[in-house]
Image (cartoon, rainbow over all chains, first blue to last red; front, side, top):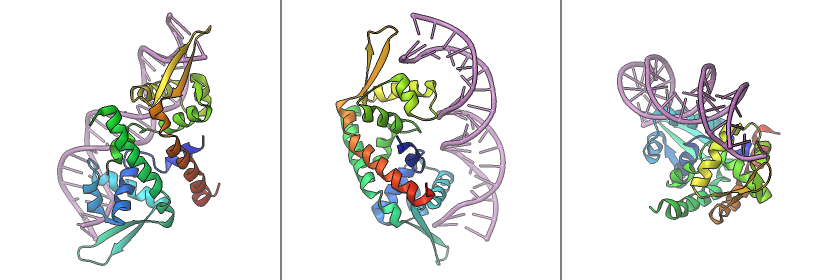
Length: 102
Length: 102
DNA sequence: CAGTATCCAAAGGGATACTG
DNA sequence: CAGTATCCCTTTGGATACTG
């Protein structure tokens, strides 16, 4: 039942959608993700990105632009989640169809 | 980015570990799951099981014993999560090794 | 055994304003 | 743009006691 610990790193309402966004576009900026993930606040996004970075799932790069932009990409380790996220997405779509009938 | 909606049904700290428990043993009783999932309280387990049942991922059966026992199994639809949960477990184990070094 | 009920502390998280 | 800070309400969830 060790999934528990695994999921801690992906816990909360937002981590999977955030990773999905970065995953889908390969690289993504703060404000992009803010738009990609419906309902998230800048405060939450900031907090979640920080946690994902600490857990070495994403990498943060400050670009030397004016004003500065920050780019997020998956780490090599984060990439190993791609398949699972794809499966979850597919499952979610079929689940909606099955239960909610959307 | 539709994962968001998909995950709602699996949201919270406990749903995945609960499903894992039922999944692993095929059928599982309330008190068994209480033991399987470290840290969960009976209140939370009760609440989460109810939600999983509403979302048609698990099926609840009251057995005619004295005192009564209640058995939980995955529904056919819940079974479709097996692969994903297995992958998440595997990912979690490798993640722990990689980051936390346990 | 399988829950429910209650109390209450802690964490989550939105809205808004502000900064380098 | 990419955050941080603050205020404050909402949700989560532990501990404990109780019921059929």
